[in-house]
Amino acid sequence: MADTNPLVRIRGLKIEGRSDEDWIQIVNGVDLDLNSGEVLGLIGESGAGKSTVGLAAMGFTRDGCRISAGTVEFDGIDLIAADAATRRALLGRRIAYVAQSAAASFNPAHRIIDQHTEAPVQHKVFSMSNSQADAMELYERLRLPNPTEIGFRYPHQVSGGQLQRAMTAMAMSCRPDLIIFDEPTTALDVTTQIEVLAAIRDIVEQFNTAAIYITHDLAVVAQMADRIKVLLKGDEVEEAPTRTMLADPQEDYTKTLWAVRSFQRTQKPPAPSSDVPVISIRNVTAAYGSVPVLHDISFDIHAGRTVAVVGESGSGKSTAARCITGLLPPLEGQIEFEGAPLPRDYRKRSKDQLRQAQMIYQMADTALNPRKRIFEIIGRPVEFYLGLRGAEKRRRVEQLMEQIEMDPGQYIDRLPSELSGGQKQRIGIARALAAEPRFIICDEVTSALDQLVAEGILKLLANLQDSLDLSYMFITHDLATVRAIADSVVVMKEGRVVEAGPKDEMFTPPHHPYTDLLLSSVPEMDPDWLTGLLEARGVDNIGDSASARMS
Image (tube, rainbow, N blue to C red; front, side, top):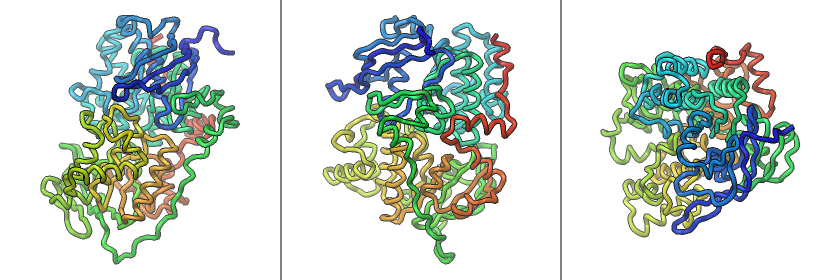
């Protein structure tokens, strides 16, 4: 039975966003109740209003948005009417937030542990020394490497997945009553995701924490949520207990969400041995400073083919991409383009060599200049590489926006802050296509997209590959994406290639033990899947000493 006095109570929530000089309604009268110890999953495609509603539960809106109607109450406190001092006392202490993009959320000038300890010290939950000790324990519970040392690094010195876990630990630091999880496992590989999901569920259960879990990953929300609310373009579609929603969705839109990711292109045959690869990685070794990251890796990418590179966070996938593009010169080995050696440092490459290899970055929030409008972001490579200006340049930018299914008339003059996460990622794709390259590195290109949009993007990339004979290096932790688009797979672990081959062979037993671990860690649309997996692996709840100390 629902609590008659829920911890969070939202009624008739309407939110508007500014467009030029006008205000446009983007959330259309949402109601929400959330009790202590309960997890509500908010799902829907990009632009549905999930993150906007989640932030509103904290009494907060993004710049350019405003709450135009409705009430938001937390533990009986009207957050809309409350003064700034009241909200400051709640935020961080009783209400915490885990953002989708950790890279955009941490201050790059301060060490991770200094940012972690700020809230518990200021709110007098812990002393500085106890807060640091608790941080290290949370890092260990969230399976971060070197938990006693990693917090003393700066954000740029850890991988995206590690930084996301550090932010989850930071949100847990004061043991809040309410946590808003906004796509907290988007940047995580499947094996790390298991540990983080188990830790989040453990914390919620131990401390009777209420949580709003925002995600486009239906299999993940099935493991985490007690109830699911579906949103579409700011409207409520339906809400039900998780098992009911999974077994018997009532609305047609919800049924389409359940049916997505059916796309799987036919695997192309291996390129003839006589063909010269578009990109060859030959015995590459690389390091960040004195820390070795890649160890003698080699693989080829042929014309019109997609090679998926998979592995855990920190395995070296993105580092290999940085070596190919010349952003990180290898210490040893060679990168070749169509049989010709490329200069190791991008600053020594010709304009045409730079044009031929483009990259779509993992973190769309940090990859787009927040001060430039979309026309300028896409138009810059159009002008730089192709020499187009004036009306020709604008026509080409409009064509690229149409290719990524974004209406130029609506979006071309917007700033990145006026786009959803999925829309930002699509702008990154258009920017890469603008140079008309032969080879594109897709670094977690669908990780920020809901499943409906992700399927459309994969189809778009496949069509572009067929029509332009493009080659892709697809860095991903989403094995469903690998099944959908890859021709061959390279599996990396700790900076080494542990297995490589055609996709069909890689998904057919027997596997390398590490590949088998990855495959078995892909969430399923079964609410009991995570519990069963942890039991099968002999994993109990992740630690309880921190809870004992807090109590």
